[in-house]
Length: 474
Image 1 (spheres, rainbow, N blue to C red):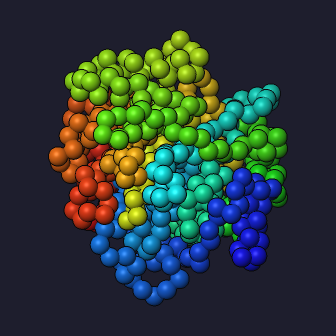
Image 2: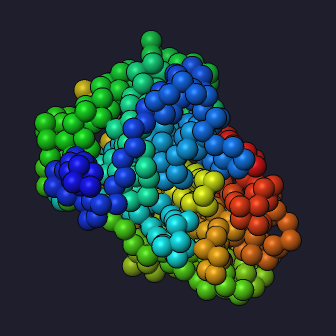
């Protein structure tokens, strides 16, 4: 017991150069995430057994906006990882495969259901939203302090069992060896190619040889791999208060980001109760809470759609009004891009996350020498509506459906729509119909009619209008 406690305390120091709120919640397991840059997941645990040999029956499911991230997440589940372990792996993989919308410099929020009976099935949120710098003096393009590494560490420490540094090792290998550029990334590149190519660091990664990288071509990020290697060896805290922190501050300053040591120290994730609506038959519908006000917006839309599934226009109006009220502003204005994913494991644990860089490719500038794209500093008018929700049953502590959304002002309604449909029609495995979801909303959903304990009752789907992937096994 003493050895375990010391290990957990060391993990807390790596997290923030201090301690985590509940170091005893950190459960470390020997694990090695080895992912080929030109193939799918090969092995997760330190053994020669095939990944599929770790679990039989229902493996769980992963749905993400970028295919390789979904493949990595499913590999974690197949090798015995929890939904939180898979979620951390998916999010970190997106740093490499979809840096337009997720990265070390960015932030996000996750909604978590812990299937453990002691948790009583009450969803919680892990919030690691981007924070503006304390001062923008001397910053011509203000950048957000990076929240993603600490946020994912907290998610892993609270709900996972895999070693965080081992997950980072797999992502490091992908960044170093390169991955095929996905359609999702290339479409984002095409939108901002001109301005992005003006930054030397971004140009070296996304425009090798002076030409924009094409779909299927190898995207390698050696500087990012080096930073991930340092993070793996020294711990997450090194980015916030160690040698890596000063290097990052200097590079961010040269890129016009204006991030200070005080900004890094203040970049702390937190846990919070979910925003929940009590429904009939011991059902609860939960959403991300403020300040992740895409959840507030989704809750407002759900209240409308639960009564009238066709009232999409009214639902969207209520959603945007609720978000504006949460932000204390009369109008939302132009909203930032985001990405999302959802995971459920064989034990009934579930995680739905929404991530953002504050803009496509953040500020469009890279902190040179680190491989980190700087996220755009948030503002009341530009911050993304981070939307995720889940439907659970209190008596059995089981998940009926989880959903996550993206697509600016369409994200909250997209999430609310599928959850309302899942509540209304429980005779089917899943109600996955987004044909009428308001553009530009996109949604990822996993739904289980009888819970994960009943084979064949789960279904999963990525939005057919996007470029993502849904993977699972009943």
